[in-house]
Length: 307
Length: 156
Image (cartoon, rainbow over all chains, first blue to last red; front, side):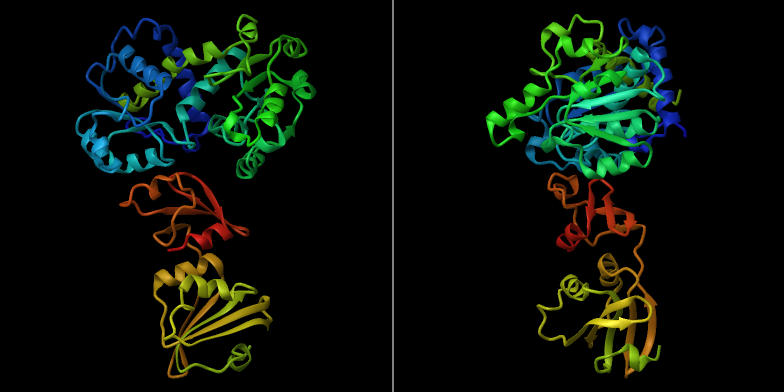
């Protein structure tokens, strides 16, 4: 499929081959992520970042990526002072911004907002997270991290631990990985198991292995993807403490894993990965966050120049 | 099967006969058509009728009312495969089977309260058909999947 002018709304819109094109391109961008692309290939482009809810890391990494490619940026990071605060509908805002820029990066609290925006815009729309819905560039940067830090994804054993029920990161990432023929393990308490409809989708490609015990499967894993368990999901604080405590990543746990095991986390973390893990060779979550820039440089270049 | 055998309850002079409704779904059809709240419409219902075609079936006859295409699409959501006969002067003048379209637009809202279609009034909710049995549809916008119970609760 042609990349020029393409919307990036949901990871489900992309095939394995297309995701791999993004991975390849991201790898080419990697040397320029810290210094900027010497050709400034997007110097004649304007990227609008419309953030209807705050998300420091995602917005900054998109803006950094755009600037590293030479593009100009406009937009807002909060609703204060914007026309949205005056009650303008999303579709109207998109129609207006469509005339001011060459691509729109949208973060919005309503699920499906980016799909809607893409129908009102002639220019490409990138979904930077729509409520508990999709966040496709996060999925692409997660896959890039796995590929870069752990090698080819086919045949890898990948474990997800924590809140698998509400965590959108896990939902889209595990769906995408099932198409790569990876072995997927889902480790969570009973109340936070992966939803049935996600499981059904994954099982179309690979079997789903579910367990409560991380110790039981740690030895099988090449990649451990940790997510935060949120307090507010539990009516009883004692129950929360008990469950959350079970899934804290300790050095002793990691030493029972494979030699090349890597640990990822979409961040922000709370207690699930204590700071003493940060300097262990398995820790890759800060690297993962840094890959947000080259992956978004690649995506912007692909949809704005078709290259 | 002869027409006499098919229509257990009295023939109607003019109106719509919905036949071959999956057994137990007749009341859902009425609920969707919002007919029970309209005292001006006479409705006959036969449930657990023996059918060579589908074993047991339900049948609904609505007098003096011809269903429009949006109503037929709604029926398909709970009674895929039902046969519709339009009757005039005791004769069947048109007969066809209701089929679920691949894309379902404008007849129900998304069950996800955080879906953008429930926040932006100007957008028509749209769903794609994922599976007929069990009936599962997926919101084009938020990608939430809905099954029969949720679907019926959210029909306009």
